[in-house]
Length: 178
Length: 178
DNA sequence: CCGAGATATCTCGGTTCCGATGTATGAACG
DNA sequence: CGTTCATACATCGGAACCGAGATATCTCGG
Figure (cartoon, rainbow over the protein chains, first blue to last red):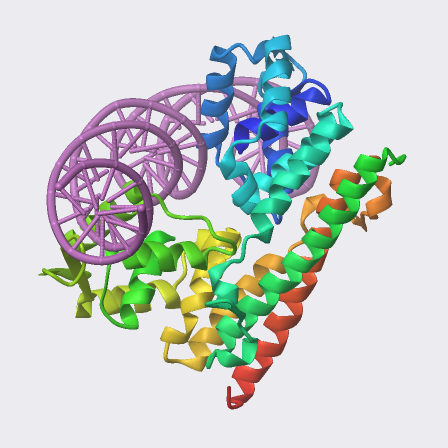
């Protein structure tokens, strides 16, 4: 998740750790700041993999910044991750929404539509929490308000995303202007 | 996340690993099966902590089942985790919805309302993806349909949950019948 | 001029999880 | 009677992450 976000942000231009921290936190649905202990090791890891290079930029700010530039290998890695998403990217909400935020970087409407179709296929398999056997559950069947709420919130989310997915896939297939 | 789910399910009655696997997978929004390599070590860990005991039940099924029983220490642990949720439980969607599914086990409406209030406080802090400074973003401002979709889906989810949270907190505070 | 706070990076220990792999049994099917 | 499938449990290596702490610089108010 983190690595995809870093690749995606750097694709828009060079940045540095402290700046990425803010941007990444803002991405994840609602502000969940990424710990420094997660971010900086990830940067180091990715530099080691050759996806980005670091240059010291002294005097730019209080502490010395190490500005990060996406390499060509990094661009290829981003493209690869967007085009062939890991199964977890399709099932984990955090990962999926991160991927969605950067799907614009995939310069191929057919490939974009294919990614959306995969998420659609995942969402369309019946979630057991929603069903009792084959029969859809009704919220009132739960004796407690918490599972009722969970069900209704999950349904609202699902409906919104399914409608958007179907409309957007159609639009991409038809080659509409965005 | 997993440990809370296991505690929560066992509170409803004894079960065994393979059964929990199905139940846990069904919980997490949409079916994301928990890997065996995650589940069984978790059970072992929790048995070591004294939260559950294992009894072999030969002949019940093909392979020998090890039926899991929640201990009193396990019940206390469940209660503790529900009453004083870890900050991550309030910010991570997967963790939060898991907690919500078992909040019924907390036998104290005031404490339940307090938990919901904490989640509400978290959701009410403005998410930077939704705002440009103090001004709410409009979906159309994004040039690509993907960030537009992300924003509209996130808003739909947010609205549904906020409405439910406020209504349920009121209801718990007034002491309404469920 | 001094301290507080924001900026900025890095490391370490510990936890949880995934993915792959291994093992074994009973049931169903031909 | 053999193959295949579902059930059931377990271990191992590695990836990713959190939380806490360490360090250093610049700015700004008092």
